[in-house]
Image (cartoon, rainbow over all chains, first blue to last red; front, side):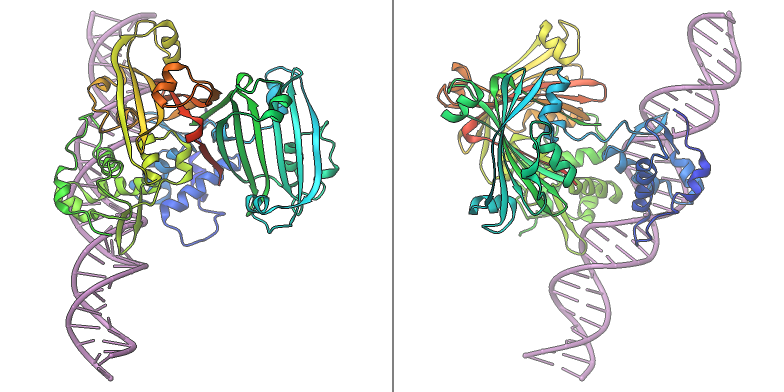
Length: 251
Length: 251
DNA sequence: ATATCCAGCCTGTCTATACAATTAAATCAG
DNA sequence: CTGATTTAATTGTATAGACAGGCTGGATAT
């Protein structure tokens, strides 16, 4: 937990795009850059308010605002009497994180495999077009993959993909890599949304998941963006008896 | 878009639990209560900084901080030259966080009310102690609150609370404010975890939620930390037919 | 009547100062 | 050496004052 040398402070504002920003905002930007560039390491102590005041000749309240807001945003941690430190990590809610079912199963030390049930190129119906934010009849891929954990079904993954953004989706070997892995490689996800519901499965879904019709399922609908475009929309169905969604937020 | 009359301001701090909070925090709390109670309507203009300064005799910077933070949290919208207004609804990013069912219902433009079914002081069982990270027999409060949206049950909220961290939990009027609102005021949440499952409700839960036994429910178990301490653990049960969990991540 | 300008209100920011609370380290008493 | 006490550093909060910049409505000039 070594300190950031005060000498660094003098060039805090150096390689900043000279937008007409308020001082506190420039300070925030300068600090997040130090952190994301790795120059200021996790748990490292950052300059105290007094040091920044002295080095940059700004008011303490201005520095305080920058540091306070960065703390609220999870970049820093502050302890009265001790100082300000680079936070552990910027943890999003893992609950709402996009994950890879294969990795998740592996993380539990279990065996994963999957079966490709459907893979086809098609033209978007009106509903699908709405979901993906494209025009009706725009080219899409549809896939249905059944995932297993220790040979027991754990997830039905129904997915539609924008062909424009992932043109080779239908040429992948989904026994080797999950759809998620391929999509992340061609169009890194920058944004997403989820809708989580408890539903009763229909007959086909029951059969695929090897469960009774009375067993509730967790349904997650998920859309992911790369920039302004929607890459893919998925409907993930998990048997309630074998699946929990765990998440952590804050810090 | 009528104004909030300045006379309201004089009793802004009135029915606040007198926790030892900083002024800006009390102000934030008072304002969110005005909003969630419906006394201050969407798009209504709220008092200007100058008016609050005059009415409450606090500094403008203090008022500014409260309003600025509430704006960042999505409660208010500010326009230079015009004033400050109650925001349309909570932004998605906020819905992500631990939320307040009352606000959520209000955000949909529906009526919320709740019934307090259980409220008792007790000693933690071994399981409860594990959950809260305290010793067995440590003092806790248990509460069960049934929340309604337009007079239809929407959530059973079972909660245990660490008495050390929220000693006045059992003195609150939960018809006025949700447990969440009080807990946030006395021990601002810094971290949390969720566990989401699809389950079948038992007979009592069915009756409380006014649903059939075959209807799946979304169960959310949630623990929230303030610093290193676990403040509260809740089990939230939603009827699947009336509830979706929406989340948004990235950018 | 119409266009222009301006005064007044409001938020946005910055500064300087003050005191409280917390922590760790240094100092002191035994 | 040990334990208690003081001190210094640091963050947390509150205040008063200042000026900039955006918006509106009313006064003014045409």
